[in-house]
Length: 378
Image 1 (cartoon, rainbow, N blue to C red):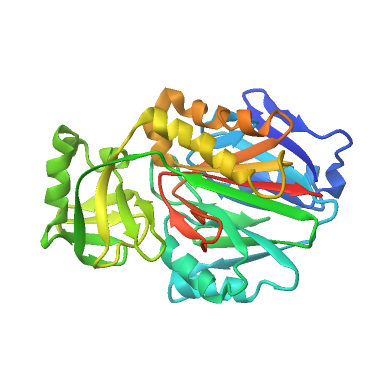
Image 2 (image 1 turned 120 degrees about the vertical axis):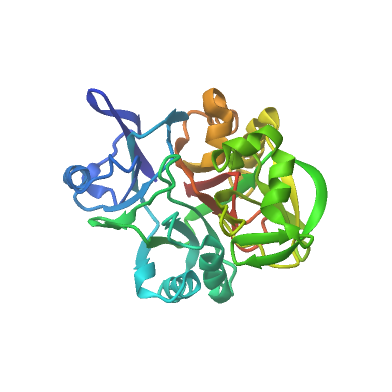
């Protein structure tokens, strides 16, 4: 695997990583990540000139990660030449399906399965229900193929996101990229680092990702009581106080970010489903634990069949970015202690992360985590 990585600056494009002998015409994939105002058809056209034989896989972000550095509302390209590994990409849009479950089911069914080793997912972060998307994918994933990825972002605006392949860039898109053969090795890690507080409560009324009642009480009012003075800053302050949801079947906990509140309906909308009967607790930030969790996720991602990866894709939640603020680069830089300078690092801040929490688990929607995928050709 040979990689070339660029980032936009005030004076134009700057190359921040490049393997010796990299050939732009041999490149097959370019991962294009950036602020929504920067991923334009004009920009994609110029990138295509540099990499004429590559598929441009694009997503808007809430911040970009390139070469162990953080960028905000910029544009990054990670051009990849796979020397021994075939790949296939599939794209679909939610407008063509009844729901996100059916979209995920159809995408996965249409992905060739012979010798398939890994799937990377980029999904719209506003129109897609991430939980249902992955339920649709998992329903057909009988061979337990590893799946990771993330939901596109739109800064802290939460208005609309874009995902695409080449010129097909629009809201509602989901892209799956399948990697094939014995030469590709993939690792993954995903951790949060948040602290739980307050009593455990039961979801007693909800509709998919919309929560109405906890312990038969108004959930929004309970939430405001725990937030104290932060309640006056809702919905923005909700990113500081996500909710954990227990998965008793797998003895794990997922984090759910609050996307919006509805005062008229007295409800809260989350970035993933909260089924009735689920056990939940409130969470709050612990800065050092959040940063250290990134290092632990990096360590998990190299605990498979290899040490130093060719490429590490870091996908972190927009909530972590807003909380860490001036310390945001620390959760990126800590991965350098694990991977080293020779590993190319790409990624973005997202509206949701896609990863198993443990090696044996199917992929799930995560929130408020640093999720890392490592790839190496052998």
